[in-house]
Length: 226
Image (cartoon, rainbow, N blue to C red):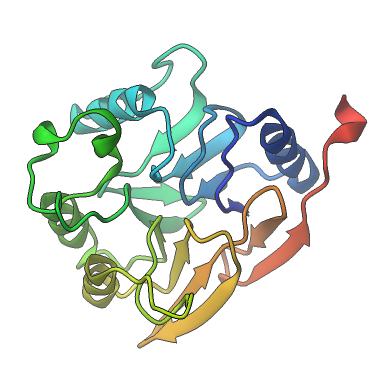
């Protein structure tokens, strides 16, 4: 199973590397932790939205999930993407839970309908509570978040998010995959292994669904496909 960190694939060079990772990995399915910015992918991909996305596309995918519909074909230029916004998915026999968005304390207690423009990038208290309700009794194998918990990343200060701490504590995933920070880092929280992923233009990962072992590879630059 292909696992990818932030892609920022609105940039053509990043997009080329993203697609090169798909080609090199040759995996049937993929997981992605946000800041995708390109939604026409070669293989079915379950992802959480980051703080840099086309939020009209994300809203369309979110609405389809809320309505219980298959989001595809969805908006033009959207293929093989499945948004996880507080709900579970079964992916290659793994139970995967995802929380879309990033944390803004000033918007955390808003209703999602009150968020507009770029503020749609945030998750709310209701989003986190929905994810906790979905995953609490579900034996979650993999949790996808864009934000990190405390203790994983340091810039001389800890950028971790209290709601992510609460989510991990509540659902106790075997593996939590994190984006946003563009660096590889690992820690353990209780029984949960937490991994911050390097960006997709630097690395891609192979996840063994049977063991949840994660192996890292250098992303090709994709120039051979030009």
